[in-house]
Image 1: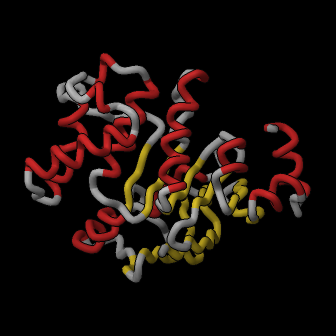
Image 2 (image 1 turned 180 degrees about the horizontal axis):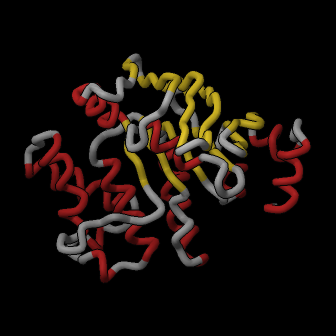
Length: 241
């Protein structure tokens, strides 16, 4: 579904991403772990063209991302949904309107159908009783679940999550991870930057360890967590587990 080949990204004179190669098959749940500053978030942003890569290629479902071709970028972005650390909900809109708005404005979807789909998605993330609330009346965990529903409303083939629980109080983390686990169980293809090692170990089928803009090691959760091949991966895991 997604093929990343020799992707590089430079900020000023600093190489933030260095020769990144990654294949994502349909149904994969890939967890990307590593220390702060490893380039994990920048990598996700390059996939969806929120940051432009300096070299290499990104190909999703047979479409190569041509960064300066507006129509091509839109096609690629339609295939991906992204959930950020911050929720970025529209404060002046209800939960329901927040989820409905993108399909109506971007895809010119029917308003009645969009509302029906939005209600279904909000039920899926456990918020059917909050459709008429405004974001300010929700907890952080609830707002992040709305953000997930909003991304799903565009019918993406691939979901990107950029540390979706990092801004949450500890007791709210579980409710967001449960929604993500349910999505994985339903077969959604996901690439997740996370510091939640339990999620990476239990839900992902592939784990990628990054440091200094490079992929240091890739393996199954069993391989990477219990028999890491590199000393650097081993030392990182000793500190975070």
